[in-house]
Length: 525
Image 1 (cartoon, rainbow, N blue to C red):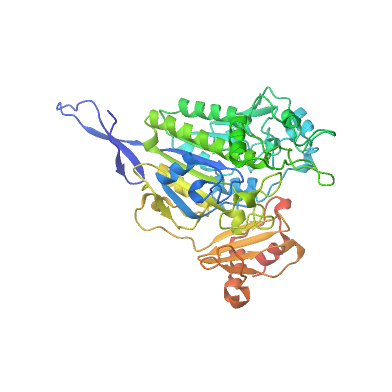
Image 2: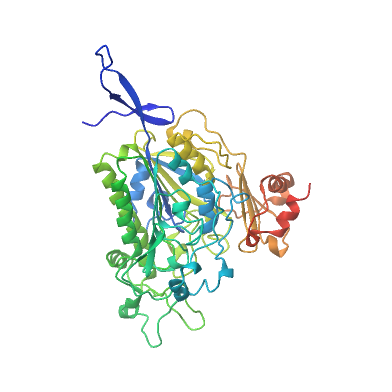
């Protein structure tokens, strides 16, 4: 018989019978049982790429089931419009004006970091710019309060042999890609398990290798070399399930940072064939004269992209089934989201899939940019008996809210103050939810950008490094897709942008993240 779960404040407690007191009577003792936490971070998954958010071509029944049994957020934002800084915001609970990593930085001064074969020979060329040693992370806080902590998937926040690898940033266990560039193939020669390379039986083709001269782009045989024996997401999922199995008797925090559906387009054959049958014939993606190739060529690009998402969905279903069979599901908070908006290169066809949903997913509006298509992401939270099934929230939130929220979920006592606002009360529909005065982003990539969300208003300042001084303003309640710039009509709101920059910006430690005009605004008192 399953022990009844009673709710007390932030945590869940069980009432257990202990040994008799001296008078022979039994005494009830309340023992705190902390909920398990699983945070699933897809990579480059657009707002509209799962069924619960309106996708009609790609099938995601297991992700949709989480929404049916939990809460769907309509106004949740990623930490940044690209991978590494978004993950930095997530793990540190600090927005892009404060978090240490504010852009993708491949740390080029080390040498040939973009040469795939050089990285395989020399592990000191792997990885990205590291977080400072003293950085506070979600994993460190949860570990201190008794959680077993694990990350499976992609790290991207520090190179091997530095102080900024998962096992030195609060995680008990790590399996997957340390380096984002190595993750540009799903058939790598190695991954990492904790601090050591985990070698795979692959003879990897270097990323960006196109078809050889004379190969027929319409012949499946031309693409066989891009499919090696070990698919990284398959072995990673096996390791993920091993972590859950090993720690099922303790509260655990699992950060599943899957690289799916980030390029390149590679997926298990079963799912590709399923979507080829569903979609029918299509043009291949390959290195046409004068155009080169990004990532890898693929015979059926649309079918393969859909296959990647459905494969992830299938594994989410397997994980949920395991939790249910082992009586863990009811006491597990599962959050599903994406690190930024959808890609627009490498054979993806975001416009055909309507990957951005109501938002523009094309270059200049999707990944890499601070428009809604680049940073508004799907977010689903499931926690049986705590989150109302089929609920929906318009609460405006961001990645830097996750740290304080999980602190509340786990009843973590900490003096650390990040930039976030816990949305715990929204999850459990209890008490009044505190709201942000504004959300803030600054991003050095693509010529420098800043964005601020103030209630219904969205302010964007782009091409800052080019000297652009024109500010854009949108009313998202009336113009969700940001088509009608009304900055001239509301100079008082535009003026708030500079007030907020002065308040929220700090000079980044790493020079690559500096946006000089922001420094001028920040230092003008």
